[in-house]
Image 1 (cartoon, rainbow, N blue to C red):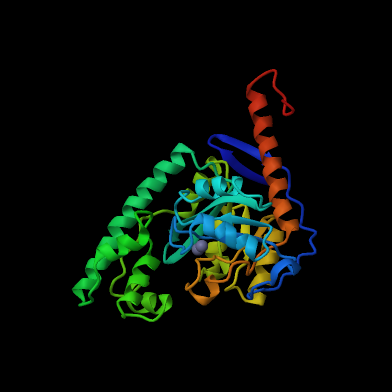
Image 2: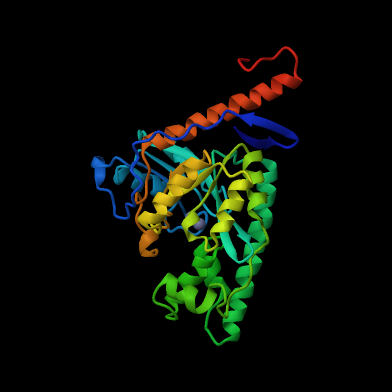
Length: 334
Ligand SMILES: [Zn+2]
Ligand SMILES: [Zn+2]
């Protein structure tokens, strides 16, 4: 039996999530999956120009259809700004693409970056939007400070270049990295991070403090499902267990940078804790790092996506039931 706090002050007993009886093979699939032959057709981790991706939401949808995907989730860092464009564009097309609104919240646990994905969040949720605005403002100030530090160590870089690249939207470190590449200080995003703006590098400035617990609560209160992104990249494995104990609902088991062994371990971990299993490419667009430039890599099967829908419906029914307990005359069927 698993327990989840879904609504402030209301503890609900969730139907135990069954151990997944799935035919989904726990192997890594880092290469492009080749058109309509694909069995793994849902890429649940994609970035757009609303955060640090290179393609607009419209271009992402066109590309998803082009490579033969059946469904995608747009999960921009700390913003929901790309979701509406994607939804509206889809309505103007005849595509039968399954679109899942998402977000990826960047949090920190001591020295580890912990990213929490939120699926099916309500993009108009006031608490979520208020927090995202605060994060957006702090990202802007942080980027300004980082550019100042780079100037102090003698690099010719102008904050206006970074702003231009971000097009007035959320600013992230890859924007600074791309300017460093343009100004000939690095030949790749990775090199720019290693030499200048990664943790411990001379231009690094710590980010806005936001804990995984806060992100999980924010996502759940906005009606979303909280999933731990790329757990294999978290250096201290105990943090993964802590996040599970904090009420995470799924693990991103399939990820381009996860080794086959990590995928097997994470798959088993998710099953042991009755968690949802997700996967995605972390696509940032052409010209991004090799592992994040391949839409459809680490995509998952419809079977796993159906498990997410089932879970969402069960939770919705739980909430209706809880509501009916305090509202005489209503039953879950109402
Ligand atoms: Zn991430
Ligand atoms: Zn991502």
